Amino acid sequence: MNKMRITILLLLFGPGFTSLIRAQNDTLELHLEEVVQLARENSIQAMSAENQMQTAYWQYRLFKANYRPTLALDATLPSVNRSIQSITLPDGSDVFVNRSLASSRTGINLTQRVPWTGGQVFVGSDIERIDLFSDPASTSYLVSPLNIGIRQPLFQFNPYKWEGRIAPLEYEEARKRYLESLEQLSIDAVQQFFDLYLAEINVSIAEQNVANNEELMKITRGRYNLGKIGENDLLQMELQLYNARSSLSRALLDVRIYSFRLKRFLRLDEHVIIRIVPPREVPVMNIDIDRALQYARTNRSDQVAFRKQLLEAERNMEQVRKNTGFNADLTATFGLTNTSNQLGQLYSNPVDYERFSLNLSLPILDWGKSRAQISIARSNNELVRNSIEQQTINFDEEVILQVSQYELQKDNLKIAEKADTIARKRYEVARQRYIAGKISVTDLNLANTERDLARRDYLSSLRNFWVNYYNIRKITLFDFREGKIIELPELNY
Image (cartoon, one colour):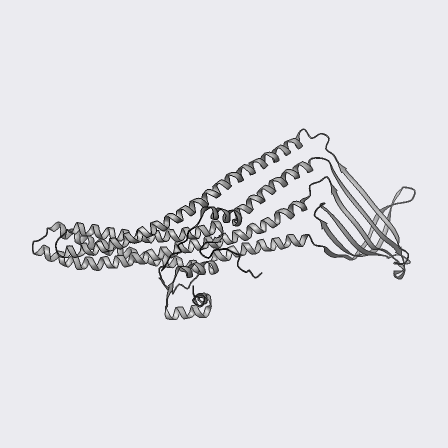
């Protein structure tokens, strides 16, 4: 396809070119490949597919960012407290006292997830200041120049491990589904292209039929006036003429309808007059079923979705099993700290501190709740496996069916093309014989009907061939015409 022609077509979406179209009421000739290309690049469906792909891309970027170190600064500047509060004296009694103070705190923390354990490690530093509004006023500081710690669940479900296995599959599935969406757009473009093409052919057929019937009507009326034919033949020819005119009106309306739909689909200016250029050749290829199955199993998004569903089922089973049993949480922190009334002495001779806690949870009596949850998860896991096995069978059947249909369509197209040629020749012979008075108007109408039917059958076969061609591309994500895998186009995010 001529790249410069496509570039010119794309200018239709610019305001300057749109104004030119409106001023000149131009006619635009479109080839099938150009309609497909415009649909994949400029239709609303194409933009929606790209938006979904963009969302999947940023979700995957978010997933990767979550497993990188996070540096955060938190501060309270300041917190003022003037109130009466209860405090506990050294002898254990409580009294109410007036408090008037301002506190400030600043800290910086570096946190890192540990995906293979499900825990977190952190490093931080913070400083705190308290100002007492008493008589006399005083200021004190508390500093922790270094904090190193870990938060680690024990014997619990690790979501990080499963997320690390499932998220890449989700992104890969989204990429392949985007490619399949583009191929589906190609199928939609083929359908709309041939809708308009068939409507234009119907107009051409109807115009030819009207012209032929008007000519034949003159001959028939002359024969009737000479008494060579009966009134029935005259009325039959007259009816044929009115039917031809009626068919022409319907065909012209269909052209307007399908032209409008195609322009909306491609987002062309409404003032553009579209003329369809029929395909000059069809991509005749020999497709081996085994190769097609291999490419489909390797490239299709369904295969990625099957692997993802199996992982999700296994994840759900592990989550139920571990969350219903013995659980423990470990938190440990080591650091340095110091306090002083003088800011300059804070970092002199800090003392170390340690914090350690281990929290345990063990269900003793749950009336069979844990067992029921595990059984449900196991049953769901088996259900997913059985469903995927059936979907895999259907998947292979679809590939085999599409390839077989393609081989059948190649033969049907040749037969339909030959039948179209024969039917047109037969009509011309019948027309000449009718003019010569050797056949009846009934025989002529039959030849005319068969000619029109053969023409439409050929276009229907041509349409089915191209739809099947792009269906094979969609279900295998392989271009058998070029002999290469269909790759994701470059996306600028």
